[in-house]
Length: 289
Image (cartoon, rainbow, N blue to C red; front, side, top):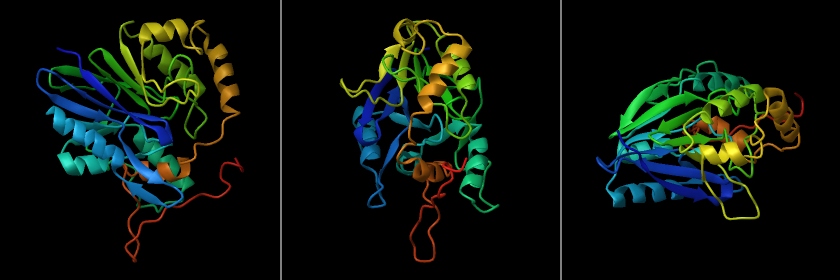
């Protein structure tokens, strides 16, 4: 059993971190949370981020086994389908994605035949599932709170937590999206920070304006200095902090565009009779709730 080499890739427009990890002994690897570029003003997608990941994989000689998403993202499109088409690697996401699909099917008023069974991915992963990437064991932890479908990938001595924790000086991620829960987020963070102290925690976003973007801190560092956890808060104390903060936050700029792509596994809506795809926005939905 081994530990992976992790390469991080920063996408400044969305504040997102993407990762490639691999086993140095077998050169088997996986991609976590790849970004498909989207310009909302032009309505244009591109594969610049995904091409960077693929170039690294090929230059390093990595044999890609997996393209993994931690959850259906609200702030960027997933590039998983494009990378699968280039590499043949299988795609995976947490099994509770079906609940997110059903929830947003209603929000977008999608037709009844819209598939909400997770069939857009090759494998739906449950809490406690394990698989190997070369000699690196990967365990799936169900980590709801930010979304009802979020999972953590624990790969050797690494945990990819995406929108559960931020860097220690930023605390944790919001829990006010449809299907989110600060109570569940508290439990998820508790489970992640019960991992060994030397576990390397890689986050999905960093928005700190007064320093360079960062992506890694250990479990021990989070326990000691994460601003939402350093005083070992009770559930009630944590929820009060999290809920108060969430009440001040605007929706992510790409949320209403991203979710209708990401509940399709990163695919654009089917082209209409003119050969073009279109995004659909639910007007005034959040103001009326």
